[in-house]
Structures are given as C-alpha cells and as structure tokens.
Image 1 (cartoon, rainbow, N blue to C red):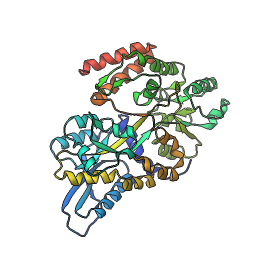
Image 2: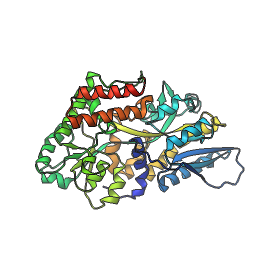
Image 3: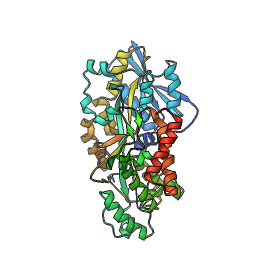
Image 4: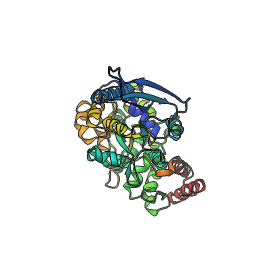
Amino acid sequence: MKKKNANKWFGIAASGALLAGLVQVAPSFAATHKAAPRKAAPVIHLTLGQWSSSPAEHQLVLNQAALFMKENPGIDVSVRVVTGNYLQVMQPMLASHTAPDVFYVDSSYAPQLEASGVIMPLNHFIAQDHVAVKDFYPNLVKAFTYRGTIYGLPKDFNTLALESNPALLAKAGIKTPPATWAQFAVDAAKLKAKGIVPISFPIDVARYYPFIRDMGGSYYNTSRGLATFPNKNNFAGLNWFMQMNEKGYFVNPTLQGASWGGQVFAEGRAAMTAEGAWIVPSQQSTAPKMKYNITNFPTLNGHDSNMVYTVAYEMAKATKYPAAAAKLLFFMTGPQALAMTAKSGIAMPARKSQEPLFLKDWPSYKAFVNGVKDAYPYQFGLLGQNFVNAINNATQAGILKHQSAQTVLGNAASTLSSQSNY
C-alpha cells in the first residue's frame, strides 16, 4: 500500500456511509464560505451546496470554485456546507426555493428528488454547451438519469473490492486471495477449520446485491420502477449468499460486536472483508501497522458484478440564473475540476479520461477503479429506503430461521407491498 494522508480519503468514506443508509442525524445548519476574494464586482452570484465531510474535501471544492470564478469573472460563487441529514435539510429548501443553485446529490435518493420536479433537467444545457457526456462512466450517468432525462452529472464514485490479511490466510496455507467466490468457498473451509473467520460481510443488499446479478437475478425493474423480489431468477443468488452465511463462511459484523466489516478486519478477527475505498483511511487510523491486500471483488458464476456508489452535482429548478448555474455544474464535473480531484486523492473521478492521472498517484486503488465497469448503481428508484429495509429485514430473518430464498423474497415483497403501491 502506498502510504498517504488518511484525511484525504475521508470524502469517500463519508459518501460510502451515506449511500449505505448510515446518515447521521444532527441539527440542520448551513455554513457558507467564499471560494476566494475577487477584485471586480460580480454580475451573478451563485451558491454551491455540499455536505459536511472533511476539511480536505471542502478545501478542494473551494479551490475548484475559485478556478471557475477566475475563468468566469462575471460569476461569483459561495460554497455552503450543509450539516446533519443532508436529504432532510435539502428537501424543504428545494420546496421553498432557498436551496443552493448547484449541489451534491447521492445516487441512492436521486430518483426521488428528480421525480419531485425540483431539479432542473440538463439535456438542453448539455447540448448547448457541448458537454462530453461519453467521457463519464455510463453507469454513473445512468444513476442520475430519470425517465430518459439527465438531471445530474457525476463527480466521483466508489465500488467494492476484496481486502485480505495475508498473515491470517497463511495460517490456513492460502498464498493468494481468491479471485472467484468459488475459490473463496474452498479457502473459507480451510480458514474455518483453523478457527479463523473467513470474511466479515454484512447482510445488506448494498453489499450482497452483486451475487443476485451474477446468478442472473434482479430485484428491481428499472424501466417499470417495480420491485421484482419473487422472480425465480433471484433464487439462485440469494440461496448462494444464505448458504455462505449458514456455513459460517460469511459472518455478519454485528455477530462479532462490530458495526461494519472494516472494524472486524482491522482488529484481525477476520481474514477478509469486502468494502469500498472508505476502508483505507480507517485502516490507516485504526490498524496502521497491519499489512493487507486490496484485490478485485471476486467473480461469481463467471460474472464480475459490483456495486457503485456515486455522487453528482445537480441544479435547482428554481435557480434565478440557470445558464450560469449550468456553466458552474459543468465546470465542477469537467476535466479541469476532476483533474484536481484526481491529484488530491480525495475521491475517484467520474471521468474516464482522468483515470490514468488518478492511478498514477494512487495505484493501490486500482481494484476499486476496476470495479466500476460492471457495477450497478446503488439505487432502487422511488422505492428508496422502504425497498432496502424490506429486503434486508427479510434476508436477516431468513438466515436466522433457515428459511428458503423463495420464502425470504416472498416476505420482502409482502412487507414492501404493505408500505407502498409497488
């Protein structure tokens, strides 16, 4: 591992936690900072909103905004940091037309905002400004496209990789981390025989959904906006995941008194875990002397599905200056701003053209970058958290009670049906 300042990766850590539904509830408060002093009187004033993450990420946004103002002397930009539950703070601001002109949006709830009519469609501005949309990873743009209309452009992303402890693997005679989940099962039996937890892995659709897709299933019909839990194509993937848990090859971190797999891994109580790049700063702060490897998320059934957690900039429909706001949005997601992101190491830039620059300085993150190609955006349309709660509760209960995959999916469908007209 290339040693770097742990704080530089805190932005990714914060994004990952938010996407996994681990939002923090705190008093709503917004602090505003000028990006930089300027000499000439501004013609237009815009506000850019971001959530509270780290001083390093905030400074990066300030620097990017300062460069934008230097190149656009008629536009002044203030950066507003929104603390607390970002979505709960932003929704009333958008409804009352007091939201920032341009702001962060997480892919997990993007469809809900975009469907509400408070977000400005971007297709017209993209065509008018000749924005090179093809330079973004397609699945990231798809995460902010609702019913054929683009509402946001991604700024960065995160995916899952496999983190392994070579010292614990060696105790079971394992020389290299598994590249496939089939090999993992073989290795897991050896580790378990030595009394070592093979992998700390949560029972959470945000993490195990790649197994469903690898085995030909899908929990959600994107074009129709419907949950598809009972589909028989979902049985194989869920059954495989449940069997791994029942054999003790996968162990839920909560069973070891931890809130996430990274904690168990850092304490040396599991040979492997599968987390996003947010684990890197955590390892540097909690287990700085531990040697570990980061490799590609293993394949299953010949497929290499993954999850992608991404954040975009979107624009308030109520902005008084749509053309200027679009210019700011395109700059903050453009090659110059994302090159600054790549150099900072705070996050993995969403543009393919910035990948070489990023990996030149941050080569140890290649497994996370590799994961984006076949990754599914972590979002389930307008069903949102109800969808996540229904399937997670059903899966956790099903593993505990040794139910069949068919029963688990039926229970999830019934729960969701009782909560919404899906």
